[in-house]
Length: 283
Ligand code: AMP
Ligand code: ZN
Ligand code: FE
Ligand code: FE
Image (tube, rainbow, N blue to C red; front, side, top):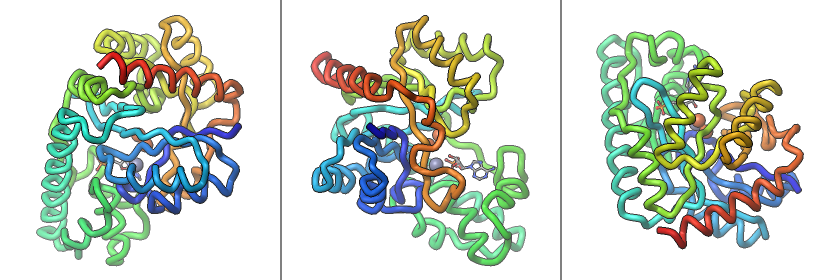
């Protein structure tokens, strides 16, 4: 059974619309997928309908950008799209995304680069972000690639970078739980922490209600996968995996990338689905 629990659509910075994404997954033989767009659930309705037509098991999800010092990506599996607290948080995050990208675009314009916020905004179906700003710069001929834009202008240490408004990890976990979802730490290996520091961070998040770790991900090497599995076992956390597929936006990552060693994916999915059911009942 092929399973991929971390996909992005054009509702955030993926290149395929939700329906086209689900169709591709079905054609490639996947039987269960989760849509986990950055800070938005706008793609979920279309994806769910497509999954029903295609006979795929579908899990709605969101990938929240949270954390104060760290840039933490928190997955919320099985969240209810209409839950007021989560809706409120996502609306706030969307406003901040728009404001932040507008500011970065303005700074670039003031420095003489040909970029127009309205064009950038129109490139995202929902949650606009730096990748859209970078694509607009490439489209205007100012840079050769998205990664060049991050390196020269809008990466964390670059001159036109504007930080996001901080949402605490605790607030993110709360919003997922209140929406009947299961909070899971996305690609922990990308935090680039020592094992000791990562373990402490996971412990702190678990105390706030974290329920699982994304052990399998395109950016995790086998040693990282094994360490994370061991941490799940030791702490009683759920094991998840997802490629973080973005389509042509990240051409090196295919559906299923990084999930080759996930041999018990079906059992892990069953456990996650049970946890989602319990989260709904326990709300
Ligand atoms: P934002 O959510 O607007 O802060 O943009 C962050 C997103 O930009 C991440 O989720 C990545 O997909 C993408 N990103 C971050 N750094 C780079 C980079 N150096 N090159 C290309 N894409 C990047
Ligand atoms: Zn992304
Ligand atoms: Fe992420
Ligand atoms: Fe992602």
